[in-house]
Each structure stands twice: as C-alpha cells, then as structure tokens.
Amino acid sequence: MRLQIFIRNWRQNVSAELEGFVHDLMTGTFKRKCLRVFSLALMLAALSLFLAPPAHADRVKDLASLASVRANQLLGYGLVVGLEGTGDGADLSVTASSMKAILGRLGVNIDGSMGDFDQAATGKLDVKNVAAVMVTAELPGFSKPGQRIDVNVSAIGKAKSLRGGNLILTSLRGVDGQVYALAQGPLTATGVREEAAASRVTLGVPTAARIPNGAIVERTVPTPFENAEYLVMNVHVSDFSTTNSIVNAINQTFGSGVAEAIDGTSISIRSPANPSQRVAFMSEIENLNVTPGEPPARVIVNSRTGTVVISRNVKVTAAAVAHGTISVMIAATNEVSQPAPFAGGAAAPVQNADVAVQEDKNPMFLFQPGVDLRQIVDAVNQVGATPSALIAILEALKSSGSLRAELVVI
Image 1 (tube, rainbow, N blue to C red):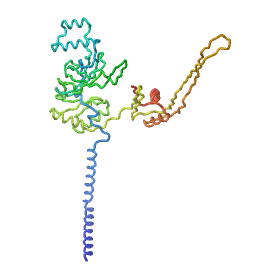
Image 2: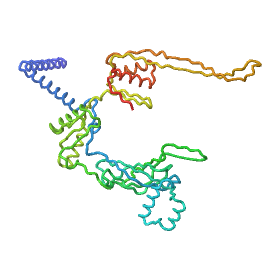
Image 3: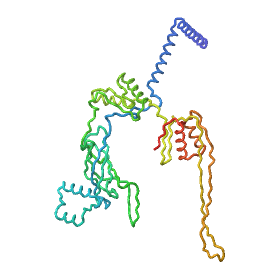
Image 4: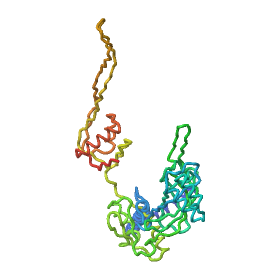
C-alpha cells in the first residue's frame, strides 16, 4: 500500500515538472534563462582572463628604472696605515708628503731640526707601514645623510699588500667637487702575498680591498622626483616593442595619456603632485606585468675562452659548410756520421728530418633555409667541431651572408 502511494506521488511530481518545462519552453522563459546562464559564463571567463597575468610576462621594475633614481660615482685619495712593512716605503714621495700634511693638521710638527737632520741624512722619509690609496664608492639614488655605503680601496704606489691596514678619514667627492661621503675603517683584503728565501706566493690581489659600510653619506644629491610634473623611466635594454608594451600597460591601468613614449628607451609618465601618492603610484607601475619584445638575433663569441652563446632567434639561410684542419708533423733524428777507415777525417753530426702531412676527414654538413638554433648546434656537434672551429664557422657564415644575426666578438 505504501509503495503504491509513493509511486503515485512520484508520477505526480514528474508530471508537474514536465508541465512546467513545457510551459517555459512555450513562453520563452527557458530560452531567456539559458541565455542568461550563457552570458554569465562568458563574463566569468573574460574576467578570469583579465585578472590572470599574461604568459611570459615580466614586471616593469625588471625592465625599466626611473631616470632620477640613478647612482653617482665618488672618488677620494687617502692613506692606509698599520701595514706590516708592506707599504710604499721611501720610494714614493707623495706618501711621505701626505703623511706630513695629516700629522701637521693634528698638531704634530716633523719639520723641526731633528726632522731636517733625518731628511738630510736619509734624503727620504721612509714609511713602510703606510700606503697611498685611491678610494671609490657608488652613491645610490635617494641616499640620505647618515646612511652607510661600501667603499673600494686600491693601492696606487709600491705597496705590496693592504692586508691588515686601516683607512684614515678620507673625503669622497663627486664630479662637481663637493664632498658627499666620508670613509674610514679597517680594510677587508682577500688577497695574500708571502715572501721567504727568494720565493714568493701570491693569492688573489692583495693590493685591493673593501670596507663594507665604510663610508657615511654627508650630502644628498638633488633629484627631480619630488617636484617634477612628469617622471621619466628608461628601459634597461633599448627596444621599441618593450617600450610600447610598457606604455600600453600603464595607459590601460591608469587611463589614456598617462604614459607617452619619448623614444625607444625613455617613457614620460604624468604623476600625482602629492609625494605620498607619487610613491604609491610608482609602486603600482613597477609591479605591472608586461610582455617584453623579442631580443634581436645575436651570436656572442668570446675569443679568449672559446665560449659561444647563440640566441633563440638566430637563423641561417642555405649554406654548405666543411671545416677541416691540416696537421704537419716534423720528426728530427740526430745521427753521427763516421768517416771511412784511414780517411783522416773526424766524426760529423748529421740531422735527419721526417715530414708528414695529415688532413682530417671531416664531413660536410648542409644548412637548409630557416635553420633554427637547435639544428645549428646539432650539425656542429655531429662533425665534432671544437669551440675554436665553431667560431671560425660562424665568422665564415657571417661573411658569406648566410648568418641572419649580429655577430659580436668580445
């Protein structure tokens, strides 16, 4: 009885659903519902494509940088003291003169009668524990007074090693002659030089050293970042495609006309006047995803090490290549020619030479039109070409006009 009631109710529900479906189909409600669902699916798909970062995209901060955020080179002259007899000694007069000037500013007078007697006796002031050095540093953009930067110290005289030395207070000047930092502190030298019993061992470069955080910034470099209406970004590698992609990405995000390309390297960007808003604005621009342009076809050859780097876009037109080497071997044999008995002559040395010429039988390989990088490498590897042979092949292909790439030899 219960089963019959369940079946009857199920049939009534199915009939009601069928009648509703038919009613919707007849009145067009079903069609509108389907169109609504289909439109919603398309909107979701488009939104997901818009939010997803493009394939092989790079951030703007990895492709370009602000022109106002640039580093500045600093240079100074100083003295390193505390060396263990490896300084300039008496052979470099500028070291002694600098030492006299520093001691004079500190109230120490070495130009008295005793100093004159010593100089008259020796002729030179011997300072074996002091070395004259050049101090260089790089002042990053937006550096403020009180911040520390690294410095490099290099000997300019006859000092043998700067290991264990200490740099005396040195002024670091910019190209305008103004002092931008002051350097001082113990040196960190990785090179080692040891001498004993007419033997010498040198590891690294002992006459060059560094002082991490060895200079304190004393002056800021004026930049147009705070007051300029337009900011300029420079692309690291000049490329019209990359520049155009960055401009399009900025205008699509912040509105048309915000960014304009000046040339293949520079981009002008209209920025907010408020400094805080300007910093936030540049932060958003730096994190935009941009697809850079394809680099030009280029082959880099290092003739000293035999290293060859071929970019992905290198193509070769139809060409036949055969590369072989000729080996010439000369073997000399020294013999003694004995004179005949009772000839009265002495034995004479005779040198015999065997000359042999051998030419390797390397097969010729053929490049079809439009050959890509993988086929070039496979063809060269099949004939067993060495790096020097590969360089010769690439130079010959470039000279013949078959290599569709820029050949750079460093």
